[in-house]
Image 1 (cartoon, rainbow, N blue to C red):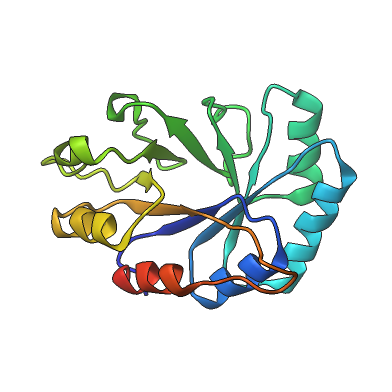
Image 2: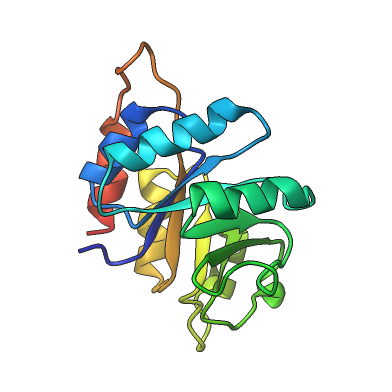
Length: 182
């Protein structure tokens, strides 16, 4: 069990999908576009992994793409920079990218993703916990340890990476980071 919910954004290959599923992350997201290959990859990923909720990252201004994603991919979540909570099914979790913690929406159907700024660490651990906020960063072991030590109660967001060759990627740092969250 993780101490913090974990979202891995921008999964681009099955190597990452299998690794992160095996590591017990809570959420993974991948981009869905007009390119049919993105939907083919989505379905392949969904067939290969278990126990992880899938979120779609897409252009929500494209109503046709949004509708196709909801109907065809049936994502459990959608990552967006726009608050579309009222236009997606109530069973679909919205991950809303926000610029400020003042923009956090208090709703059980909305998680917020905020880029972590170490200079503002105190804002992430106020008296009222930001448990529905996921902090996103190019995490180092030290920066993640600092956030945890200060008492942050929300989620942690990482990005998928590139393979060195098909099926090959170095996960040493990611192993260390995920170990901190257990």
